Amino acid sequence: MLLIAGLGNPGPKYAKFRHNVGFMAVDEIHRHENFSPWKAKFQGMAAEGSIGGEKVLLLKPTTFMNESGRSLGEAVRFYKIDLCDVIVLYDELDLAPGKVRIKTGGGAGGHNGIRSIDAHLGKEYRRVRIGIGHPGHKDRVTGHVLGDFAKVDHVWLDPLLDEIARNAELLAKGDDAGFMNRLALRTQSSEPPGAKGQSSAKKNAQSHIHQARKSGPKPQAPTSGPMADMLKKLFGGNDN
Image (tube, rainbow, N blue to C red):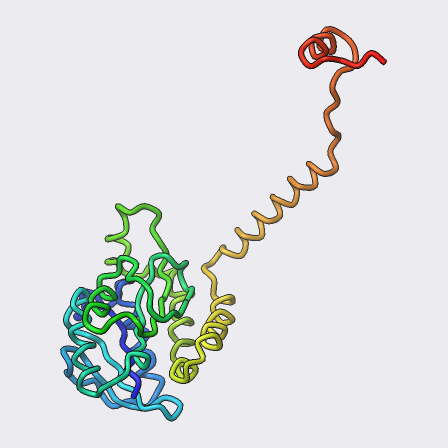
């Protein structure tokens, strides 16, 4: 059996927070695949089903983010799930919005939910990190993470969540590269408005500067007059 857990905080107050994108992703998988209704279990909300022939337990811990490991630990022990069959989806500050990366093991990177799971299970489980972007200064991190996604974010967020659900079979089968590739192809066409134009404008500006530097006349040092005499005194000259 696979355990696919999304991280977040329970309750309507937190439902649209960036910190809850793990919950959102697991909810989308639940809607897309044939799973049982959510039930209160393992200190969370759990649903059973299958993805691509693999038996799967979906889990959303209701312990609040900082105690996520308690919920996952209980489910893992009950079903005797190997750590390599645990997949956790969560928000990642250090990835650009809409970018997704998967890794096994590693550090918590300041994420309290991951830190809790590491403490209860160990580190060798698969981590699906969903980029929410960094606000630019550490003093703004809490407000950014514990704030709702902006309307403009849904340009990339909604297609991304849909694509995660559509390609959950690749995730279940361990095809991490294929999974990330599918998501990348979809999200390339779902960049925030203006992002492509800004990138293109920046490239054009750099190209014009390069051409000007390449084709423009090179400055010549003076060969006669007071300036030339001064340069000869400073650096020496060749009178031959």
